Length: 299
Image 1 (cartoon, rainbow, N blue to C red):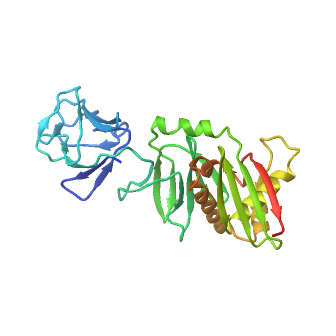
Image 2 (cartoon, one colour):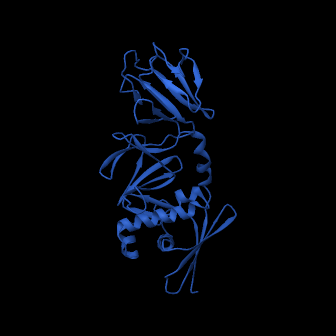
Image 3 (tube, one colour):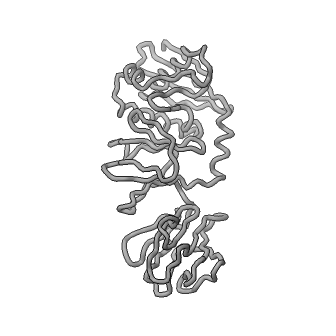
């Protein structure tokens, strides 16, 4: 995802799609303060499948000891040594030339975690929160909280401050927005005692058998509430308070968040788009996205 490793220390720098090196801490993503550094020293960009560095400084940038002409861009290759001064006192080795990825970053330790569209953090065994992508938007979920987040959003995890960076690439977002217009179909097979809930999911003329899972009962409860709300407008239809869901399932909030994560993860194997959109959340409430519902009971 674009990583520089310092040749003088064990620190690393991850690169944003547009990443500024410079002396000005208000504008630079990586602050450099050596003699000869400029307020805006250079800019690194992800472009056409490669990383490019453009020198904007008075005293130069160097790749493998060779100075880049001011205002010109040079494509970086893995293993290149990049320096913002001639004597290499501020220098890094280019270790990863892949595309930018969404991350959370702990600035104190320079540790980062790459994000998928669905994330339970720090892990499924000790969950504290979730970060979920829905189309072009990202959301932070913790307990009853569900908030839209953008670059720089900060939160506490394991007693440390983390910051969110989406690192959007435009071409990755538009296809999902088109898919969301489709209305999927969910068919439930429910045992008489309701201990077993199977789901068949239909989307874009394809049918996927999701099997029988514990977290399917959550989806069933949301589906039933959507059907009960049939007279409501779509914007208001099917919303359940978290407390009502907890009461009906007989679980606590932490367990509920794990079930939501597992349900989304299971759907992701067949449809990344619907793994992001099928279960919708807002502060204190959740619902099933607009869909066709069939519930068969009694096997």
